[in-house]
Amino acid sequence: MYNTIIVEDDLMVSAILQKQLSRFSQLSLVNTFRRGTDALDFLQETPDAAELIILDYYMPNMSGIEFLSKLRETNKYIHVIMITSADEYSVIRSAMCSGICDYILKPFSSARLEKAINRFEAVMRLTRQPNVWTQDRVDALLNPHRHYSPELNSGDDYKSKAAKINPTTLAGIREYLKGVAGVKMPLPEISRGVGLSTVTVRRYMKHLASLGEVSITLDNKTGGRPSEIIEYTGTEEI
Image: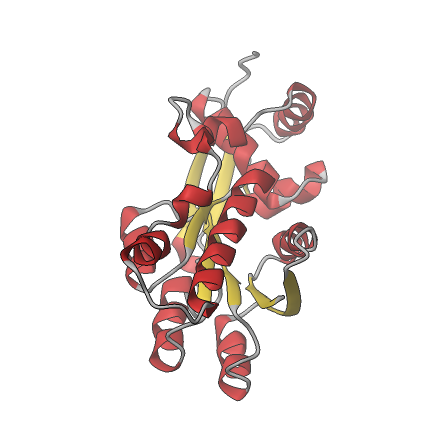
């Protein structure tokens, strides 16, 4: 069993991750943190407390990349799966250079998380075997994607599969937005208004933005995670 910690400032997302991780009998969740500094303090006091970290990028005071930089100063071997909405190449590249095990974009599917856990477990099995390192074992260590199901290598767009839109949910969100048309609102406020997680609402906002019904801007003045500001501008129906 592999001890795991979650570093995620959004309480709703953290709860979702805890529920998702409970499906994996090989994982044991030992702690959750909303701030990277708190997680680093925990790992400094108990460096062998965990084998796996589930990490967000947007967090107060310290980004996920800054967390990784500090982490690698003292702990070069703990595995990290980053789960975040940060889709900039510079962030992805920096995370890769910091030795992450996998990088998952929000919103994510249970199947994609399972692939990441399978990849982590495959690497752990290899590194815990005392056998001599043959080329086959080195290749498996460097390319554990062989443990993934083949759907990511098909010609289909995996992200579009993961981001399915439910017509009933879309209608409810659109109805709520029509009632506040022209008002600029932060994403969490809309999430509370429709009674859905921010991850789910963000997916539907991106869909409505692609239809030209909403505008999404980022407010970077709040510190930590940029605040997504939503304004409903259209009345298109699908």
